[in-house]
Image 1 (cartoon, rainbow, N blue to C red):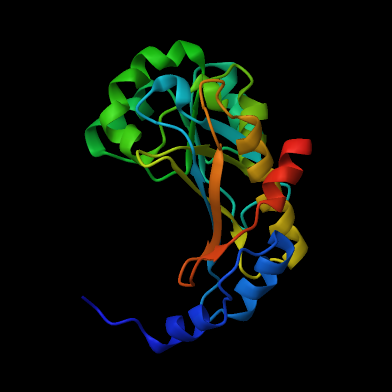
Image 2: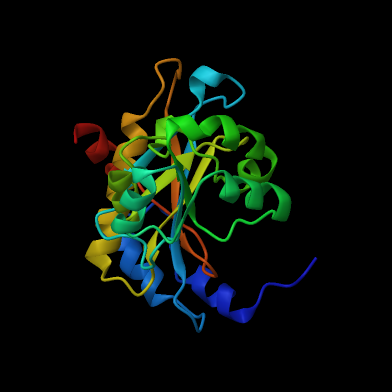
Length: 235
């Protein structure tokens, strides 16, 4: 078992044993930073659902008002005029069956999001083993299977992210960079929490949000109080 470094120990010691309001947690996370690069700020939500049941799976998308601090590389699988629409909207990679073949044969996934038109899903269906584990499989529920290719590309470029519960009922999502002004991180995190709260499955019983933690790539987690969830529920 490896020993904890002195920097992370010092950072943990600065966190009091209590839940923090979001507006207080963000500047604290920035204050205890010790890594020499611009870390990603991440939000983890523990939900009171059973992901083994399809009707309790929590999945959705949200456009973060201030993006993630980087431009996502978007690939589009379509044909004809839709390819030109994708290029005009700023997609880095566009193609048809030849792109599907490249992904299948070469395992090529040098992109952050894949959008497809409905008519191309028959071809893309065989890419599950390559795209599934990376969370890149297009899905109508997340707006990545659509005829509005240009709109989908622009949304992703503007900061649209996807979230879903994992096997342990956790949602783990980036909400920006540590260098962001505190108010922008607060607004991004609030947008995500609000979306997750609104996505509560009708089959979920009992307490829905059991805990929220804010952390950075290298830093410790800061527990958030229930105020942010209550505010999200009223939004």
